[in-house]
Length: 153
Image (cartoon, rainbow, N blue to C red):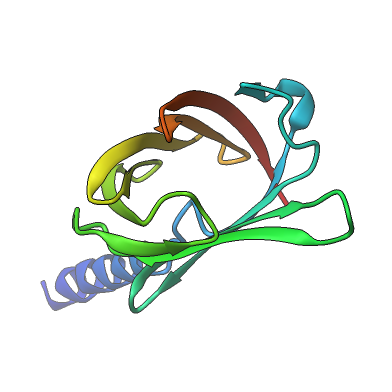
């Protein structure tokens, strides 16, 4: 009986440790597949990198897009999955809020002057190698949308 109990305790401990060490599927660096992405209005960027990192303050997201004159446009925020508004830098948006739908899906809502102006769904493929970012919004009355396909680096 003691041997069975010890074995069961060991199995549960190993399972708990494995679960605790499972990395978030979003964490890492993702590179835009421009040939399979769409932007309306176009043209979209030919190069873009998205980085995700889990921090004590929530999910830190950074989008880096090279500009025509050797610079880089950086969009950045850190937000918890609590539906509250968090500041976003480098964007036409003022704030974003995040909702975790499931392990491989995040919904982001962006606001300008306190009003929702953008929705975004970020979804990881079943094999964990592709991130699809679907965005719809309007900036100062002009609608835009995109489906960005990114590959894990």
